Length: 405
Image (cartoon, rainbow, N blue to C red; front, side):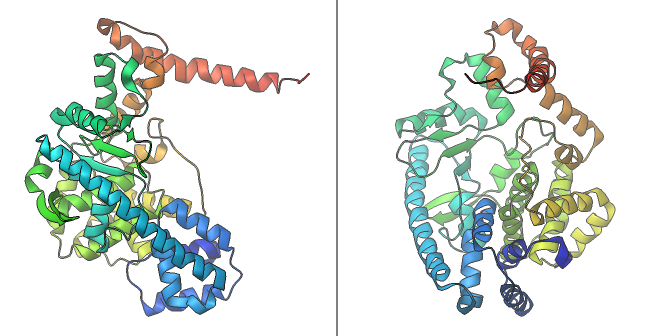
């Protein structure tokens, strides 16, 4: 590991070592050394759940050091893994039904994360934790996709029923996706028509991604999956837009490098430059090297030498992970990390302007403007978020808690 021992708690060091794709003798020895120290098992399990690496962590600890774990924890780990796989099988069945329903309607879909990513990168669709079911559709198919999902019992959240078509179009353009829930489903469904929200200034080659997509067999049916190069960039974009805040994204990238090799790195790096997500990729690769022990290809190492800001961002993200920093930076609030993550100054300025000025659901609900005056939502959002709301919060703090009677 590249960080100093004193930089991280025992639990976080165990978390990182046990989530690595390869079980090396050096890592196993380090795990045994750490288990000789006092371990806060509650903190470790909470961290694994929060970072989405519970299957990897508990599986590795059981295989590498079962006799050194508290017996009740080892048994709980086995039960958890069994229950997780059963849950995932149920979700996979539901996902298969969704993909079949879309296909019957003539809608093509490319699963992005979840069980398909687990199958491609981990070799087992049930072996990775996932919270939702993400898939890509073409923007022209977005409304039809939502209708098909509605027929299956899924409903959008937040409910856009009270929004005008103009309002809905603006929100869909900003978010690049929507979220649908079903009362008895174990996971929400998230159809995407792009890979990142519009306030992140990326030049995504979506048509190229559709052309390069490849057929695979998933849950006894043939579906489309991203080409290996696109899958690497998809994982990097997802991790980068979330500020590499979860160890799962770093683990996914490490598994991609390992499972999809040999990869055409000059082509991947060139594509990342063209799509303006090079820092997302390089910061993730440096994190993968530092935390997951990934050996960097020569082309990636050379690109990192030419892009020192990516390495700096990786250090920031690693520091947050290892210090168990739970600070959350919402996607639609200006973040210093996301600002620096953009490759070009013009893109950084665009990111700030769009994040500050583009209205969201809560702003559209403040007042109903006719479509011809939609542009007025931009200054309205600015005044609400950066003048009225801070002034109200300041006044509230100055007045102190209201006395109870």
